[in-house]
Image 1 (cartoon, one colour):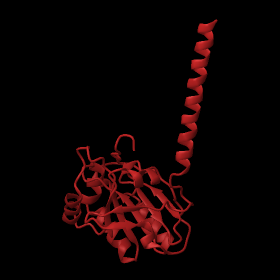
Image 2 (tube, one colour):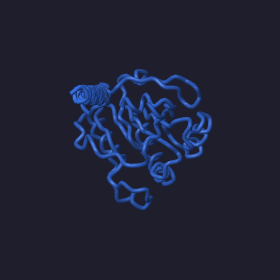
Image 3 (cartoon, one colour):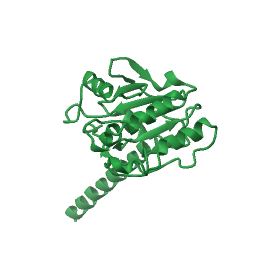
Image 4 (tube, helix red, strand yellow):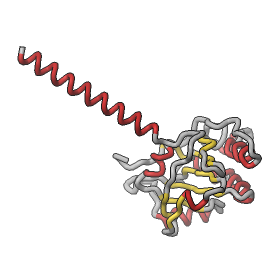
Length: 214
């Protein structure tokens, strides 16, 4: 009888712990960026060591791009100059473009800030700034899952697009020509004062290299 009581007690404790863990995950999920809601505020250092905050660009349209030079999907869009072309077109229209590097410093893909800055320069990237997120705080706030993973924030600070850069989820450069660029489409509608017709898509690419426990 005591054994049964002990077993029952242990089972109940496990069930309660599991329930609380699930509830904690749900609360955490609710704090992740959501399309149609205010974009989470953040600050991060760029590759030159300067602190950049989303609040610095209040009243501007902002694009967030998760980048990792070691990812074949990122290479697809940089080697073809598709990403740089999207950056230039956006910034020419007054849009702020922030590339964010969320990579665990212990991971093989990690680049020191100077090295990442050099890589972006070698690719002739036109991002407004390239930010370091080694602890994964910004990535977690936005629920970034892949590189690339793209977000568009309107002038009111509302997240209006989240997902893939385009409609062809491959690492093949040849697929770019026939793809719909979701970020360009979202920007065109946002800048014209229209609702974004395709506000969410499934992001594709390499997994974001979060530090363990982040």
